[in-house]
Image (cartoon, rainbow, N blue to C red; front, side):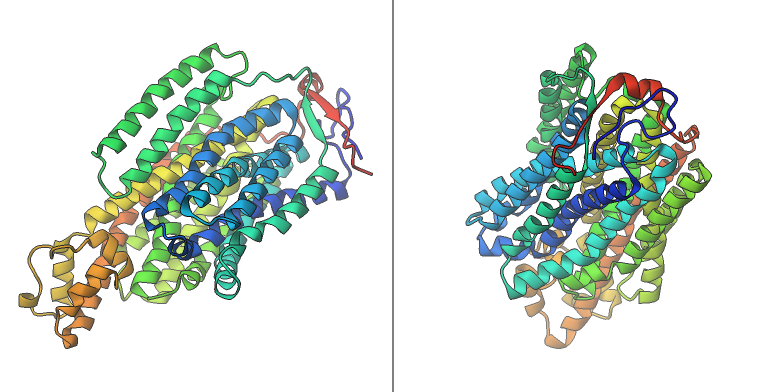
Length: 550
């Protein structure tokens, strides 16, 4: 099996022309690789407290996540650019190999610093998985076809959210936490073999190693300090020297990056992309919409754990209505776009639905009925689903085929940064809402005598930290100073205050979704191409046979 040359006037796909069976086998392999990345995020998160406790590294907890985030984020645009130059196959395989190596080493970790370092290796590979997988869909299918297949990407993430918490909890409880990393290896090896065996390499004619080193270096130096600053800012102190310094350093190197890209012969992020209205509007809307997705997917499990006393695993399954809405709307919206060729008003409607769903959560209280929660989650999930597939589709349709991988990875970069910014802003808003004044008001409203409730924060009581695990050391100590018959009343007040603060924090996601809805109105609806221009493809692409194929 091999990629065939494209003839002028051909109505077939110009990049990868294989038979229908091979096309769907490649699609399965790519989805399997994407599932690998999504599963790692959902399987590790719930059991991370157990891992950190075993390795005695509570003070380094956040860096396990930050190390992975840093390396995966900074490599996204590099992989995208290289995949345009040298083909998707070698870049995707390199990413999977690095990811599997990091997974195996993470499972062997005997200290927190080892785990942090090996998670960084995982991130180096993870940066390739999502954007190049989406780019492969762009190679396999024309823009008019892609919607129904890219809609499956949202479904893959939804399935990973369902499988991950259970599998992580089961392996940790019955085998060892080390296996939450080892489990990636067999899945990844299957995906790696299928991609090597089936996926042809298509690269630009005359491509050579011409990596934009100044651009990569300045982009890295712009992104890394900002992500570190956002991590440090999650405690709510945006004026801390590390936070302010990180943002200032990021701005300085962002300016340097722009200057470097203007002079680069083959820039890692072509600045001309931002003169493309579809790309720019899609990037803005995606950045804002991920605020809502991030707040929902992080805060809701936290509420289930704190207020309803659910386990980490159970709190993941409590999100089922949200995930069902996401999966269904992602798949359906892709089919609708493929059949009708229209997407603008579908995106506008989805952003509006997301805003409504998140606004409903402002009414969250400790005694909110489950049926109301299920409805709110389903509405929010329906709003998120189309975003997962359609923005990528319309960006790929709007840029030259030679920039398909670059544009896809750049949109992924925007989505990842938007998630990080959204989480930090939402956590800051949550901590600002969760004041002792609110706590005292709700405890008294629950029936506790005012004389038993201090008017100021008790010494040593950290509201933000202790209420996220009511039963935290100082929270427990505070409750033991209260008569036993009043302790349930105080706990009810805690839960109500927590719910109000969390609900009010959802406003940031709702407002961002409204702005994303407005941005989507600025889209120009371009016809979805039934094929790529043959002249462009013939001039820029060279098919390379798959040596291992039959």
